[in-house]
Image (cartoon, rainbow, N blue to C red; front, side):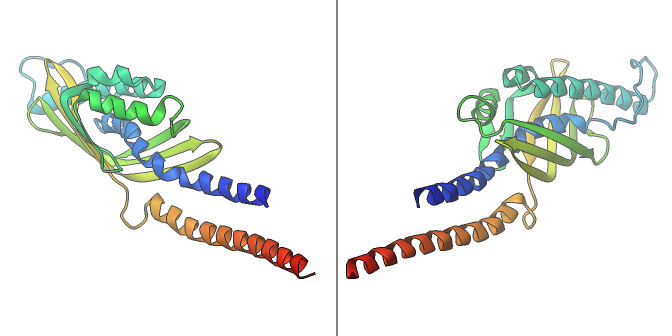
Length: 229
């Protein structure tokens, strides 16, 4: 009986861990945000020279954002969140998928580390792909807004959870360097992995309860028959 109940408990543990993975999706979004700065098929342009048109000026800005993207991509690939500091505005705000709000660089770094580092890490590794809606919307030469969709796969103890949803980010130029000032991500309200997980858990919990009930009922019945003898 103990072996059977232990098996049921392992099944519960395997499926209950996945909701904790959702906040970690924002770690991926930090990379996704930079990927929207330009589509990969665009060609790089040269430095802006005096007398060029506003369109050429915008192209130079998109080139700067492409470089910004590449640098963040390198940091995220290594998983060293401390190296993200130079890319975050001092007043950066991130709204995580679990509803937590991080304000300031320290809070953002601490949140990411709590989900991915140490003994309490809830994800072993992740992969991601992004789709960019279009080039970043530019507001003058010091502000840009990007948006698109991100698909991320999280791996933990041999299990996999895939999350897909929209995201957006705002970037500003501070002291001649681009920085993330706001990041927001979400999943579909009616087709999110949590709903799929919840439907699965209904069957798992029901099956586990039925199995445990049969085992306990059988043992009680056996003891009662033995006592009657």
